[in-house]
Every structure is written in structure tokens, then in C-alpha cells.
Image (cartoon, rainbow, N blue to C red; front, top):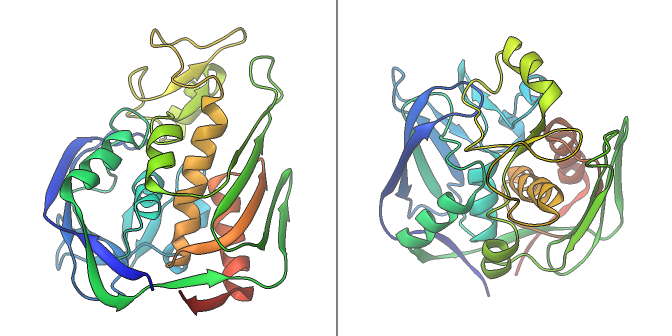
Amino acid sequence: MTKQTTILKKISLEGIGLHTGNKSVVVFKPVTQADYGIRFIRVDLPNKPEIEANYENTATGLAVRGTVIGKDGARVHTIEHIMSVCAALSIDNLAIEINNNEPPILDGSSKIFTETLLNAGIKELDAQREFYTINEPIHFESGKTKISAYPSDHLEIDCTIGFDHPFLEHQNLSLRDLNKDNYLIDFASAKTFCFDYEIEALKKNGLALGGSMENAIVIGLSGIHNKEPLRYEDEFVRHKILDLIGDLYLVGKPIKAKIVAQKPGHKNNINFVKEFVSKAIIKKN
């Protein structure tokens, strides 16, 4: 029988947001209330509004290069890396206080978030954990994106990405069973990326305002512009899996299913999550 969890102690991080460029401090706080979920609390706003990180609060119209949640006019941008870590570390209940509208991007991966929450420690609660499972395949398709779910007794992900670009035409990778150890080794350090020709347009649209060579991989025609070498040979698909893990956790509970994703992105990930929840079954372990 698997128990719900939270963290053992309060811990914080600070830095600038990838898209807004805003400086923020995030404070992770333990929650001993069962079924509380993962909630972001905008402590800089009147009444400190709480926004639960689930698919019902996603702003899909804003999910261009990151996952955005909002409620009653309050928003938090680019939450996918934090959600990914919570899923990988099996954290069910967590209060995340933030004093601006976007968490820090840090080094562009989820490595520092993972190490920070591991340092905070994991505490079991008395309440039993629930999971989403399926008995039949679920299929979602939009444009060039295809995402399917198949029955499994744990979370598996098979991801394929491809671009009309000479340096990044195709990458594929499979994650056989998500756990904190393989996540930390194989996915947490994978950095976010973009193509060099996108940067000007992104900034004109109010995105990537906090982006730099320190927190993102910039891809050119013949390779990357960064001085730091790639952390993995197939780092780009690893980061897409990192993001997908975070977006999948917006269902509000852990998933037991095999996810097969072709060309995933935040907007389509969220729309798949909505389709998945409408057909999935909640079970206790």
C-alpha cells in the first residue's frame, strides 16, 4: 500500500523566470493535509490566491512555450519543471509560495529543483495514494502531434521528436519506469532549448525575456551556440520527456500507463491530459 507524501521541511530557491524575465523567490512548504495536491500561492498579490496545479486551471491559450496555470486573475507561468520533479519524487502534497508570476528557470533543467526537494526530504502521510489507470488505449491527435496511452502497471514514456532542421531532425527515447533514481540520472539535467532563428520572434511576443546561454541550449544550423557541451547526446528528447512528465502530473494524481508521444508540446500535452482524465479510472494501490 502506497502512502501520500509531502516534504519534511521548508526550503527555497530564487532566480529569474525564463519567459517573463521577472525575479522571484519560491518557497516549498510541507503540507500534512491529504489530497491537498500541488498548489502555487501568489504571496505578492492581495489575499495570497492559491492556484492548484491541475488541468482544470491551465491556460492553454498561453501554453506556447511553457505551461501556465491561473485562477481568478492570478497566474503562474512555466510550472512544468517543478511539476516534473514532484511527479518523479512522488510528492503528492506541496505548497509553493511564489512572490512573482514565474518560478526561476535556474540552469534550464530541473536538476536544481530535484536536488533542493531531495534535500528537504520526503515524508509519508497516513492517507493512501490514488492512481489513474486505464483499461483501454486512449488516443489524441492534433496537427503533427500524436499522444497515446496504453494500459500498464507503472508510468512508461516513449517519446519521439523531430524538426525540419539539419541538426535536430529526429530523436527517440524510452523511459521504462519512472522513479527518482533514473529521473535524476537520465532526465533532470536535460536543459530547455530553442533554435537561434526563433529568438527574435519569441522576444517580440514577450517570451524568453529571461533566456540566456546559461539557461537554454540555442541550436544553429550546424550545432549549438553554447560554450557548455551537451549534457547528453540526445538531450533534446530527454528534455521533452522531462516536460511531458510535468504536464502529465496535471491530472492531479500519479499515472499508471504507457504514454507514446510523437512531437509533444505543452498545449497538446494539456489537451491530451484532459482527454486522458475523461476516460481513466481512479484506483488505490
